Image (cartoon, rainbow, N blue to C red):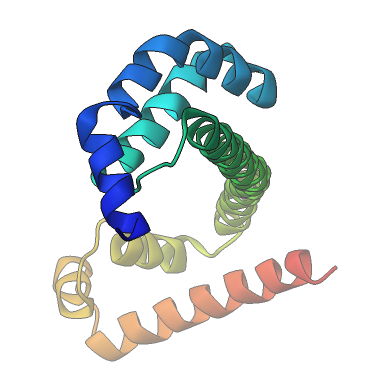
Length: 181
């Protein structure tokens, strides 16, 4: 008689039944997993995972002692795997939250710079010549095209283009002085 048929017959007779072992030692398994994890909340899940895996396999044990040793080792390994997984998640959350905080700081800083830049541009626009300022405002605030501006003000398209060009250059030069100083 070979050992595989002996093991199968032992398992099938119920001498070494995983169901019986689970029922008999369930609380011990959970306590053991809780000690390894240092957290009782996941202990029952670990034990259930181990037994689910055992029920899906075709492992047969010669004795209850061998089965218990195997099960305790499986619970220990599954607990360690779970702890490592939790550590990886924690590290990822730490890195992600640090990165997110940095992004928020950068976004807040950029928003502040943009506000400051708009204030500077508005101040400088007050110093533009009256007609130049009017044309520039119609172009960028009211979003009129150059022909529309020319028609409304009775100016040639070329004059409108020149005034927009002058205003843009004056503002650009002023902003560049501010940004690069």
